[in-house]
Amino acid sequence: MTGYGARTDGGNETTIDLTHERIAALADEYEEREPFDLVEREHTETLPRAFAEGDFGRRDAEWVVQWYYRRGTVSDTERREAEERFLDNDYEAMVDAIQGAATADSLDEKLRRLMSLTGVDVPVASAFLAYTRPDEYVAVGEREWAALSAAGELDGSYPDSISPTAYRRYIGSVRSVSDRTGHDRWTVYRALWRAGADD
View: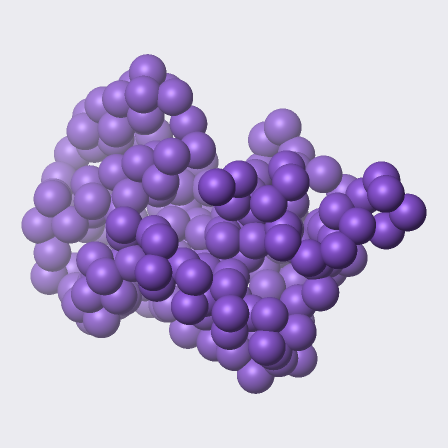
């Protein structure tokens, strides 16, 4: 990726400095340029309580899966297949898994409950966590991971398959940047997304 908008060391490797000011600028850019910004804000206000109380409809859960895949990072074919797999879930099982994840104490238990659903792997589970506890969790993807790696905040390239261990590493890096810069998790997430933009 070449969209980090920072500096090039030795003409070879693009890097980004995740300072307080840079994150704020990237987050502002996200608000201006990303079409999902407004609806994301609305859902981070409404879904956490609904998920925790089990008071949500099938469409609310489907929206999270659609959001994850429709941000422009996968092909239309892959997106449609993923969304169709999720539709195979029984509604009551879906409510039990999502509410159980919202109220579980440990990250491992949250992931286990979510991944009991058809079509939910760690990345999709991370999207549910982002709309369950936006103060603690954000979604994981190649673009965000690459931005953290370019900033020297996360070692290694994006794995072929994200495991719970890999997600713990990722979210630990996000929290570290958040704590160091004084920005909340979602602001850091938005900055990472824009840092990896090619436009």
